[in-house]
Image (cartoon, rainbow, N blue to C red; front, top):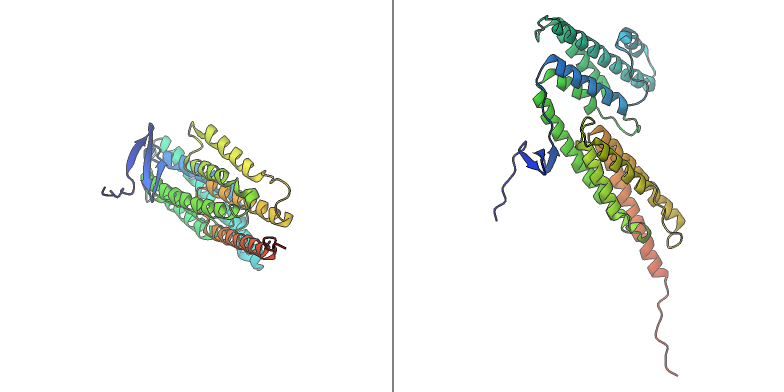
Length: 315
């Protein structure tokens, strides 16, 4: 049978649900709203809420304090504090852009025609672009790495047609799903080396499957109640696992338990933000490999230390 390559962006119906294909994954597809200032405002509002929900605390500075935030950033000489103040300035720029866009939508609703080259439109774009550059300083709420993709999404929604923004979103979701699968594979391979944890292999499969479903499902989707509750329960099942006592070194049990919790946290962070976290993923995969090799070495050492029994010799 000839393998037929599936084109990027191809759409098909699966069990009554429209899905779109990107990079090996069939992802839930949603209707694209008409491209208007109002639609862009709603999209940018949603992206803004999502951004501040996933980055460090304290960055959601009101746009009215933009001048103060800029002065605080420029005057700071301590580099560690300058990074944080850069994030605060990015938040103020972000919110000022949203303020301008809101007023433009209100003017349009009053019948005022807003052209793309309008001075306020240009200022809005400049603020979003500057916040994107500063956003590279900002860390994810976990503190492990930055996720500057989230700072770029509102600018994309502002600068490009909404349909193009949706396409970029599907590509990012596919990349996230691929990363989640790599985490699942590494975690399953590691826990299978310890009999007391090997029973969790299908649990990890279920958890990552729920995470991928969460990644592709919008909060406005009617299915979100079932999707979110399934995801939370799967995470709790994984994190609350207690192995039967005995059968392994308690220290090794603790290491495996910590690995499970770290993996669950990383998967949850990516599923909620809908973006891959390459730095954190690379560190976690290395941690899995290290624990896998350590467990293998302990097992081999235990076998070498076990005395061989020989058949009793006849008198």
